[in-house]
Amino acid sequence: MVELTILMPCLNESRTLAICINKAKTFLKDNNIDGEILIADNGSTDGSQAIATELGARVVNVSEKGYGAALIGGCNAAAGKYVIMGDSDDSYDFLNLMPFVEKLREGYELVMGNRFKGGIEKGAMPPLHKYLGNPVLSFIGRVLYRSNIRDFHCGLRGYNRESILKLNLHTTGMEYASEMVVQATLHKLKITEVPTTLKKDGRDRPPHLRSWSDGWRHLTFLLMHSPQFLFLFPGLFLFIVGTCMSIVLLIGPVRIGNVRYDINTLLYSAMMIILGFQLILFFVLTKKYAAKTGFIPVNNSDSKLISITMNKGIFIGALLFVLGLIGAIVSVVIWSKAGFGDLTPETMFRLTIPVLTAMICGLQLMFSSFFLGILEIKTKK
Image 1 (tube, rainbow, N blue to C red):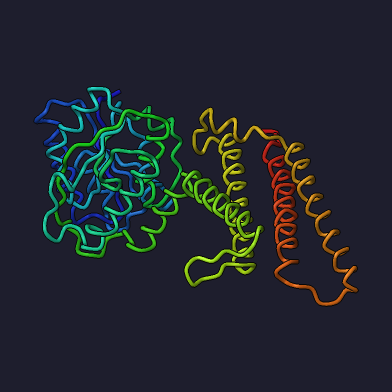
Image 2 (image 1 turned 120 degrees about the vertical axis):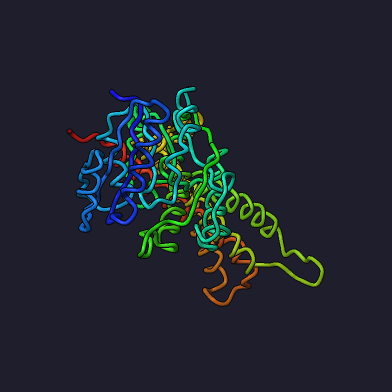
């Protein structure tokens, strides 16, 4: 096994590939590092493979399309203990990789480059990416995952190959950049960041990155792998606020200043309870799925929360539904005593709205519990 693999994903980069390979070769030679240069080719049709082979780089052909697919294929084929990945468009400095190597030798398992600390050449990054996309997505990543990484999407990064392989990364598109940081953080790998530079690439064509679609894929990935922020916290907020509003309005109308809050507001508070309850159930189901598949780690506190069994959930949901049904029957009896005629809405809605809320939440819990049971079914391998 060599110490270092310099991995470059490639899709029709004949214009700049030789420059990148020669810089990487110079770096390995000048720093006396036992290493290899590996080109993960993603179906180039411009002769990139021949250029790489002629310059002594090893080429692995990755048939599945996508930035992430190329890097996963390259990582699987790498011979080095450590891997430093970087784009083959001559935007990253392959002559200055020692900060990454030094941190890897110190025991860090993921070493991220930070272009905002190292310097971004004028014109190297579109303003949309520089001032909105990268800062906003990196900020969201730091908040959701309590990460210290300031540049989530830097394409120049080094890692311990064995540690990253254990994460079983699978995204094939540009969101692979986020997946590596997120999974490394969730699995508590030792992570650090070093300054790096970004210069204008040497392409004579538009980049493969698509700003809005790839940015959306990054965002949805960040949210889906953080069910606390996606489901639990919004659900608790809606449920608690809706419940408090309902309790107050069940007693009677409330006047704040010149505004009177009554049964219409009570109806909206019921909606908040139902939606919040459903989001909390989504969190439990997501965590149960995570415990079964391992797509995100499940900690001890989450394990206690999702320990509810299908039968318990069905029982509690049925009990809640029956209580609501009893209330519905009571409301019909009251209506019958009035000869099934007109009733005062303010009076009846204070009974029917909480009754329907209880029935809906009960049914939600019952059917979600059945789905919970489905997730627990063990299938033969």
